[in-house]
Image 1 (cartoon, rainbow, N blue to C red):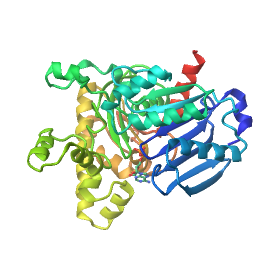
Image 2: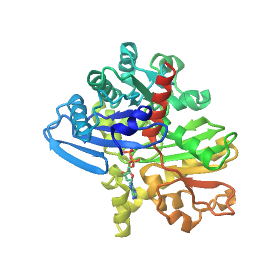
Image 3: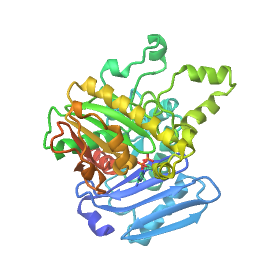
Length: 405
Ligand code: ADP
């Protein structure tokens, strides 16, 4: 991390990922991949917020009141200044914003102007938990860094070209069209980045049939043929699909009706139940895989059951995508759980030797930060672990948009 000197070489990109009460940021060079600084502000809007900034090998944490995202970015800018980086004069190439939902409108990284802002705001009804927070981040960055172009990179974009049969829900067409109800998919920046890394790692740029399993706190699977997604597990919202940290993933939609009619829960209560109090957390009280693994080791039956349900759902999706793809060349694990939890990888693919999938236990047990193969030499399917890097992908896409201006 070298502050202003390295930045003058080409111009770095500031990547912002604004959540409802958090802001993650990273300053990086899209070409050299050098991360010059990163940080996270948490509990924004509460009386005791905190911000952690890392630059030049130094980590500083401060507990203070950050009433809004504007205040968080301002505080981050002062941290940058303490390290000799004045973001207003540093020649930043762009600010790249992660925006969760692009709706039917946005499927490419997009230069932000007032019209784009109002369209992102209009489609916020599709992602009421995420897009408004992303917009607050955009607004704060534009007012604090008015001379730096802002680019929105959408989490749904990669899945824009999903085949119609995979993207369409079997509900009344009139209602679906009127309310933009279709399967959009999320974590697209990660699925695209990781699948490209896999193609490079295997030196097989075309016609690769692969399954990518992004297992973080949120989790999603995708089936990708020749670089194009043919299916993905998240749907109109990030609630569909795999069992996640706090989200239920697939449930019978009739449960929502039952909760409303019989349990008398209102729509916001059901929203909170399914998004924040379900998944692993709802099943065993923990959403962090490290705690679940520890509890299982101590004989906790609830943690074991939650784990089994998580693995069951994961295997169901892997099986479905193997059939959809017809032929699978690679299965890749990524994100916090996928990159770190060796037992999840082993259990997700256990007993599939007849399908040409054989994990090598020793390779699977290695902890590393780089892309690696964990399948046995006699496995027909390559099983890989590839770290995701959404910030780098956003920085590259933002830099490309600005370069084309
Ligand atoms: P997100 O970006 O969705 O918030 P991450 O991709 O950072 O999530 O993944 C976070 C999750 O990864 C944590 O909740 C935890 O369950 C899991 N995780 C992180 N490190 C480990 C580890 N060493 N072993 C097992 N699970 C881990």
